[in-house]
Image (tube, rainbow, N blue to C red; front, side, top):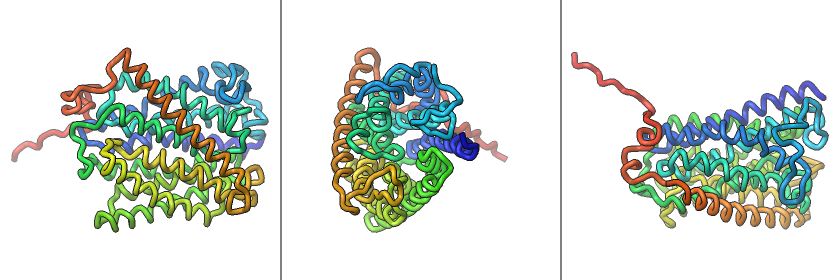
Length: 412
């Protein structure tokens, strides 16, 4: 084992864990004040529910030997996970540290979905949906891409840090969930009901900060590849945020703080599958292209399709993850990572074929399974809040709390 690698991976794990509270702040700032606590808690709860499931069975079903569809039971309740390295998953770090690092990915993925159903879903129903979705969607897809014998990996597909596994699954699940929940009664596409742009910027900052653990940590060592992934992460987000601001400026006459934060996140999403496979110029281009595509997708979903994806989860994570997965297959080069592959720009179409097939399968599987999970849960409990509960706000009706207690100032 290498002490520097262990120290870096503990730090990377902490950085990725910080991203889930980052999501909570990011989403909480983009809803009306009456539902800030509810929106934040829906994300925060994933730290408990999914973290526990990962230890019980999730890790084993992804990363132990099974078949091309699902893993086995060798690591149930983390039995057989020790302080010694598992050569297949970080030859220089303890196996238990790899488990922890991967747990943070499993935790943040369902948390991302919550932004699409903010102000509409019952908290009890969400806890059940989150648990079932993690086991029925995240776990199989993670095994396909990263697990031993997973069929997308065997096909030659590449996903460095979760474009397919994290962002496409959460993004397309968010679209299905938003459609099944229906629009908020107060939904007006032309209105911005953000509670706090400052909270959105705080959440975006935490996400950008944590993303260095997300992408650079996926090198599983303190080495040059981690540095390359950190650099591509930084510059893709920079390009995306800049292009997004100018796109908003040209369309609506002014740039916004919320738009800048969303643009940066779109760039971070798109570079995730590519971070350890592409050059820095390619990362800049990936960020810029994704900003234009996702900015258009946000307007299409809300203004043209009249779909209440509250905080643009599908447009950023679903569309952004898909764009990033395809662009990975175009710009990837072995000069950056010998364990990767050459993409279209370097004369090979094999990676494009594998990533396109993998992406299509992930989209179809995620959308069908998400529909089934929500439908099954709805047979046993109410999933959507009532119109009256929505009007009063989920903070009061679901949790008996509110974001801020403001005392009236006494008259002099």
